[in-house]
Amino acid sequence: MRVSTEPAPGSLYIVATPIGNLADITLRALEVLRGVDWIAAEDTRTSRKLMDHYQISTPLIACHEHNEQFMAAGMVARLKQGECGALISDAGTPLISDPGYRLARVCVAAEVPLVPIPGASSVMTALCACGLPPHPFLFVGFLPRSGGGRERRLQAIVDAPHTVVVLESPRRVAATLEDLVRLGGENHFAVMARELTKLHETFVRGSVETLLTQVRATPPKGEVVLLFAPPDQDAVREVGDADILSRLSALDAGQHSASQRAKAVAQQLGISKQRVYDLLHGE
Image 1 (cartoon, rainbow, N blue to C red):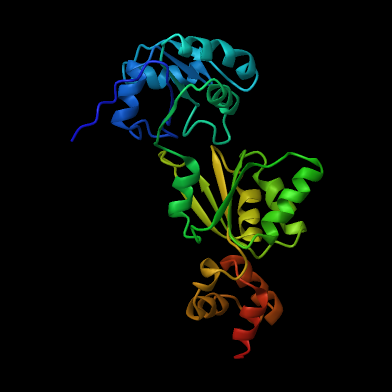
Image 2: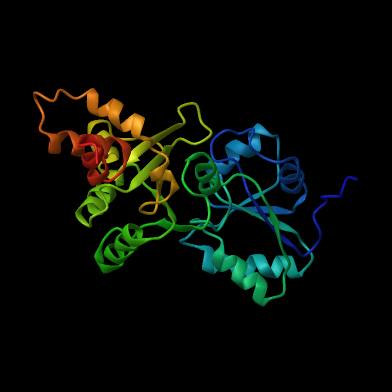
């Protein structure tokens, strides 16, 4: 049975848009974007590309972190007068580390219905393909750039008993991994998901220290999601003894001490050095 998606007067639709591949938008989202009176967009220039691709001519209104509080009252007034609107971000699901919370809060206070139109999300896209325990997980968004808040958030990642998902600028990935190593998280298994749904989509897996080495050698480009496994969870235990022994045998025992070989393999696989060392000595 087909349910009508014609926008209802007086409602604000929170619409997810693609995070990269323009085909990742739902039919319902397209119908809503065509049917509303206006679309509040984080960056109208970015959103215009999507609108042009799908031949959507609905007027765009700029609504970003710098003007959202000011714009919210006017948009809610229009909704209370019977218009219907949509809220979108540059990519993915609005409000998830994107503007929109202030507008949504004003709508709730004014008893304006909020209607979610689900779709793409970099958080869920990365989580379902990273290979780490998917639940429970903690999404912390973007980390503070400095100060005690950043230090506390990073320490919480190191100590977390569950998978942690972080959004990060490609320019700050190395600094974040360096800080995690400094706080004792060098052997945590981690995944760096980059350019999700795009042509150069990649998942890089290994210990935090291994990822740091790679990032230093080849700084990432494009949007990045970092995911961190809890210590001693399934994502770490799934590394088998055969894989460990294979990597140990690839290192020349004549040129590396047992401790050096154990440390190198532990970094490659994101497991504890002690486990590799014990296996090396047949314990």
